[in-house]
Image 1: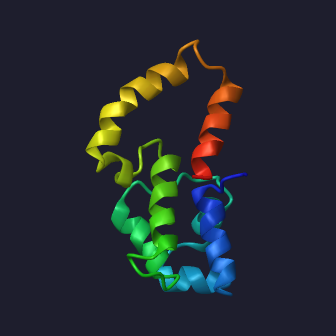
Image 2 (image 1 turned 180 degrees about the vertical axis):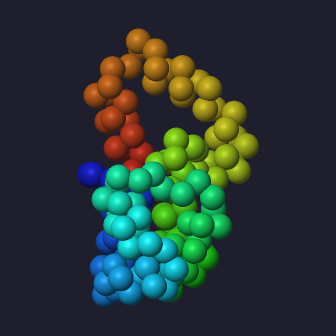
Length: 123
């Protein structure tokens, strides 16, 4: 399973809402060229949650919708940050050092890590 980037997901949402890039940018009050670059992955996703929210709101997404949550999650990942829902889970945060030591150590090869992550997606 291939996971979409922030930009690819944003574009997929925009297209599913049958919005042209120009109309979306008009609603968003953003430059067409910059949003196009964002959708194509040539610009990084915004780091600010408020700006990510603006992108979703211009698509008509509710703050509590799964699509909006996914936009925020992908923006954080694309910016090299841990998603907020992970950081808010104290038990999970306490286990992250062990995970990172294992993932970057020699005990698991990349294929095993990827298999493990794929198994988490199906839970």
